[in-house]
Length: 299
Ligand SMILES: NC(=O)c1ccc[n+]([C@@H]2O[C@H](COP(=O)([O-])OP(=O)(O)OC[C@H]3O[C@@H](n4cnc5c(N)ncnc54)[C@H](OP(=O)(O)O)[C@@H]3O)[C@@H](O)[C@H]2O)c1
Figure 1 (cartoon, rainbow, N blue to C red):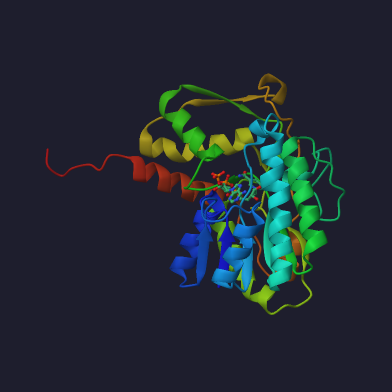
Figure 2: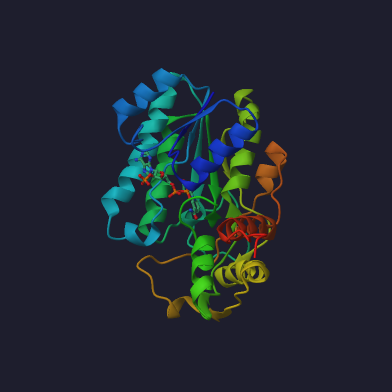
């Protein structure tokens, strides 16, 4: 069975749903069930569930808040992965660990390769980088999957924020000089389940991979797509105005280029991502349709 830590997050919940629909044995643990930075809780969970694969979907993902809550970010993103990796090594269980485009500084022209040097520019990125290093150091049988710009029907994310703003505002001002690939947690969850059997065959495929949706856009492009898809359903068409990063100051600096080259993943595991618009369109429609009042046949 597959044991997922960080089960209440976007990816954790999508893993649970994907496994249920495919009758795959998978158990998710929330922070309350097992805090990944707590070595006793992690060891107890591994000994109780006896998984043959662990997925670490737990992380401190509040990028701006991390700047002022460095110890919290370090605990969840660096100490936690180290504790998990060490417990997996002792238990003889391989682990899929999820990481981020924010390990890079965003100055490269073109998509980042797995072999490009990391250079994080904010606390979140630095703690995630340290978490990757700990996993590599402590557990040979690991796969680190770096992804980016994750959204889902569950939890908090940019897509849901845009839907909320589109319902009430006539104009949205959105950053248009940061580039990346909006990635559906649902698709990422399916892909993790797809590669699980390959990992369990224990071929020599351990290491670091990039996996995001295909195609690159900006936050402005992402928001424009969400607004365009929801408009015919809600009747709301706010203007989406492109702005520069400098016009939207945030606590954390963000990379201008978050594009990840995913060819290695496709080559090794045989799964190529769909274009980012497919997942964004589907998730937008699902969220908007489920929140629209049901029309009654009775006048
Ligand atoms: N979201 C993105 O845009 C994005 C982009 C690139 C990469 N990623 C990576 O993708 C992975 C999944 O992200 P996500 O978007 O699903 O994150 P998420 O929705 O923020 O969920 C993270 C979950 O991890 C839990 N958690 C945090 N620290 C924990 C700990 N010490 N022990 C146990 N659980 C803990 C959180 O619980 P609490 O709610 O109690 O804190 C939360 O339920 C993460 O590795 C993240 O770094 C995300």
